[in-house]
Image (cartoon, rainbow, N blue to C red; front, side):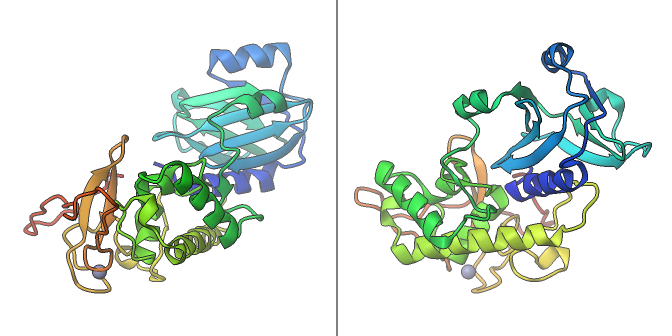
Length: 307
Ligand SMILES: [Zn+2]
C-alpha cells in the first residue's frame, strides 16, 4: 500500500511539472469523470496546484474543479514527458492530464472523482482534522496535541491503530507505524490511556522527521513508483534500512530479542515490534499478559512482503 510519503512525492513531482501550466488535454476511461469533462471541459483550464492530503491526491484546476484520487492498494500516478512511452498498458489508464511538456497518467486508481472546493470540504473521508506530518505547519506540539485529543476521546484505542488513522496524523502508513512505535519504545498494542507525554512526544517527533527524510531522499524523481526507499535506521543498504518492519523472527538491531508480528485492528494490518525494547504495559482492566506474536520458523526464513 502506498504510504503518505509516496503520495506526497507524487503530488510534489506533479506540482513541479504541472503547477501553473495550461492543461492542453484530458482523457479518461471512467464514465463519471467523462460526463463532467463533457459538460465542463478540463482542457483549457490552468492546473493551479497538486496537493496530497493524507493518502488522497488532489489536482486543483482553475474554475473551481478538483480531481480527487485515492490510490488504495493498486493505483499510481506516473509522470511522463510528452511522447514518452508509458510503463503500463492503456487498459489500466484511468485519467490523463496533459500539458505542453508533460502527461500525468493515473493507472488503476480505484477512486477518482471531480469535486468543487465546497463539495470536497463536505467529503468526510478526505482528511481535514489530521495534522499532515509532511506539512509545513507540522510541529511536535501539534502532533502531540492531536494524539492527546484522540486519547481523550478513545482512551482504549491501540496506539498503532491510531498512528494509521489519517484524521489524527495524516500521512503515516503501515511501515512507519511500526517504526515510529519502536522509536518510542512503545508496545504497539498499548492503549492510548497508558502513554506518557514523553512517549507521545517521541512518536510525534520521529513521525515528522522520518517522513521528511524519506521525501527528501526522493527529490528529483521524475517517475514516481512504489519501489520504496523507506528507511529509518539511517542505513542505506536495503536489508538494514528498517528497525522492525518486515523482520519477524529476526534479531532486534538494538537488544537481540526476536522481532514479532501480529495482525492488528479492524483492517488486520501487520504490526511488527520487539518484545524487549517495547514492553507490554496493560491499561486498567486489561490482561497483564503481553500480546503474542505469530510463531515463526527460522528455517528457510522468508521475508514477508505483506503490509
Ligand atoms: Zn529490541
